Image (cartoon, rainbow, N blue to C red):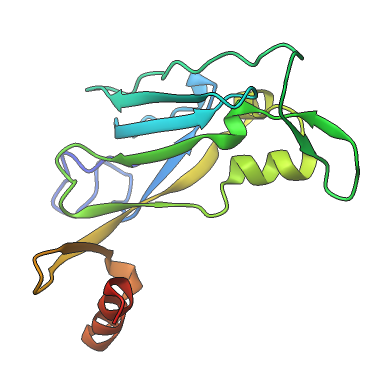
Length: 182
């Protein structure tokens, strides 16, 4: 995560270059949180291995840990089938972790763009196991907060569009037409 506050005259903070796209990472190791990380506002959601939905609001004035349920013991009811195998293994709750977020004060000019497929789900599907041990060793990029613009449609609806989705006005028109079904 990158800091948007206190920019110097060159558009950066200190010796760190300013970036208009903010990377959003998740880690289980507080030592891996970047010094320039900024707090996010949003909602984390997941499904437990017993297929129960969970959620946590993310809204703190500083970067703080978000409580997440501990991995369950092997009394798992739902499992995942290995690719190319008939064997099953318990489903890791972290594999279903989903985030909707923004940075306080920048909601009108940025939009959340999650990686698709989720790197947590993809990795669990491919190699199995629990993501917690991997997140203790290495942060994972969940997506990006991208600069956006808002288009006011004639019918009153508003579309928030990532700026990088359109290179010029005709591309913006085509993008909006697709979004509203024209």
